[in-house]
Length: 380
Length: 258
Ligand SMILES: Nc1ncnc2c1ncn2[C@@H]1O[C@H](COP(=O)(O)OP(=O)(O)OP(=O)(O)O)[C@@H](O)[C@H]1O
Ligand SMILES: [Mg+2]
Image 1 (cartoon, protein in one colour):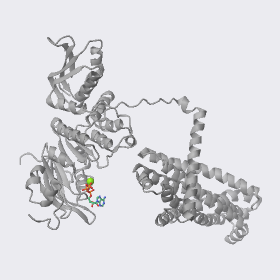
Image 2: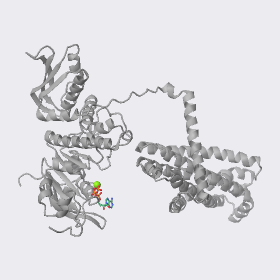
Image 3: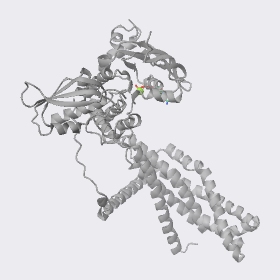
Image 4: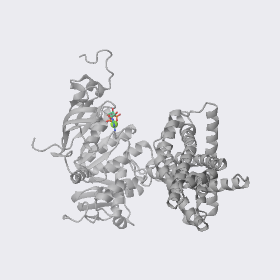
């Protein structure tokens, strides 16, 4: 870029008393030039008894926002020190822009307390945060219970249209991915078992392994994991976006509890659809097992008769009980993250992540607990 | 005309599917104009703006910038033309995950060679222009609705654009801020030689600063008047336009009388 280098110079004003200083601006104050920073001027002015600063621009060439940014800093500097700033020497445009820019005094942000990393890791603080989290979760769970009670009493503001819509989203829309995962899980179970069992010549017991494994454990767990990623995250994103658009506030001020209006239909839809999905997943898992067993030389008839023996009401019950509990956990994790999300796009993303991560943790912990429980009551 | 208009709209027809919003729009925006798009709520002002910005494709017709068709321009040409624009949207459009300062610094970082320190100073200056000096470190969610509007304006003027598009810039502002905004728009026009196209319902600011306008009618779905709004208020042949500009209700029974 050509042009004159931008610069400034200060000189005393003749005949204007002690403290008057003229600031001569010269050259092109535009992008591409190395513009002197305001710091340089402040250094030159430091230590002087100033009462007036006269801006003069006789040799000023082109200028853009850089000059204005510089002038604004001059203005703020003068205002702090109660120096009179005379802008009559500036081009008319620049003067008026400066007038607009300075018509509102700058806002002083309140001092924020710095948080150090060692404070963030302070165990007491972490405990307090966990306590807050726990309290929030319990409160949310309580709200849901109240909402359910009101629903039973027929006084909740839950819309059946919403419920049907979410049922459709959580059920039929999830068929494809559930089919894929459960067939594959069934095949994996069968393959894993067959390789071991055939060493003892007990290959036919593969059917038992697949049936019991799918019904009690893998069918419901895989379905829950898929639904946590699919539906739990969607719930969090939906509610988080509603939070950003003030929609949750609008619902609350309409006198409707967001839990009843938004959370219950989602929760109930998932609770209704999950067991159905699990039954479907179990069937497909056994089919997957049959395919692998066929490949390993076990006839279809053998597989079926062995499977028939393995299937027991207790296994199915365990799977279904788990599926209902998991559905509740996934819905709670998703809706809670969404409902308490921040109000920015990043916060909505965070809510979705949090929904999936918490749901997975809940799932694993709950699964372990339920297994231990059934072990103790010897429900086989 | 020797010099092509900054924006020229020729026979523009806007539609969503088979739902025609406005048809046969023809108007010119000259350099240095403050051009106002007027009309009742829902008549298609924001839609027209989105067509001018190339966010929507016209059903038919053309939009020329300095004589060059925007509708038929290549991607690169469009990007180059857009770089000279500053835009605010009806609901702000600030990036919610960035602070106000980062929002305004973004176009500067993308398209200029200012150093980091210079960008900081310029951000400070642009925020001061809209009366938000000192709010650099606030997230959009932490400031009021009117402040978000002004923040979006500061981002729009970050690059000292040649054409400014505003969708209802003063909605939600108090009378003083809205006066200051008018003043700011005038100053920007003067100092940058910018052309301003805006959608607004604020009669005060329309009469104070607008030099040209177009009135879109919801009933007939086309432009029914255009020109200096002050002149239109007193002399328009269309009663609807005069009523709009003088805030009168249609006389009961005979809207078409006189
Ligand atoms: N994405 C869209 N799809 C279909 N129709 C739309 C879409 N956006 C807007 N419309 C329709 O276009 C019409 C004009 O909308 P527009 O937003 O342009 O109104 P407006 O004049 O800006 O109103 P306001 O003053 O209230 O902002 C409306 O009737 C609206 O229903
Ligand atoms: Mg609009």
